Image (cartoon, rainbow, N blue to C red; front, top):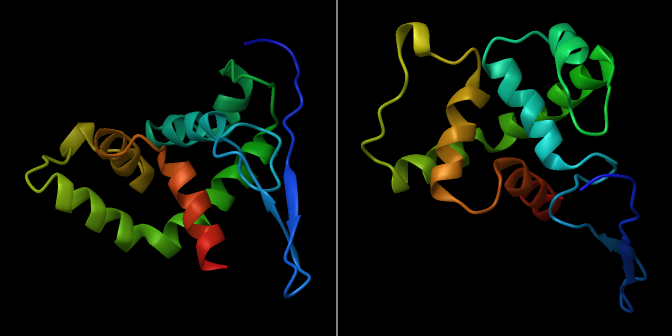
Length: 140
C-alpha cells in the first residue's frame, strides 16, 4: 500500500464516570502515527547489531526517512514497556515452547528484543508490540 490515508480513532464517553476513551486500531500505538510493524523493524534491526544512526541513514523504512533521534525515542518507548511485561512474555513463550533452543555465541542477539520478537511470532498471531500496547492499556 502506498500513499497517505486516514485512520479513524473512535472516542467513547462513559455515561457513569463521564470519562472518554479511544479505540485504537491494533496496528498503531497510542499517540503514534507510524504502524507498529515499522517500529518492530527498527527493534529487529537494532537486535541484529545495526546502530540507530546506520538504520536512519540506510534503511528504507516505510513512511521515512526518520531521524536517529526519532528511532531512539521509539526504542526507549518500547524498552520501557518491555521492562514492565518481560517476565510475563517469557512465561508465555516458555510455556508454549518449553524446549526452545536459544541462540548462543556469535548468533546471540544484541538485546532481549532479538530473542523475543522471533519467538513471539511462533506463538501468537498478534505481534509482540500489539500485545504490549494492549497490555499497557489494560494495566492503566
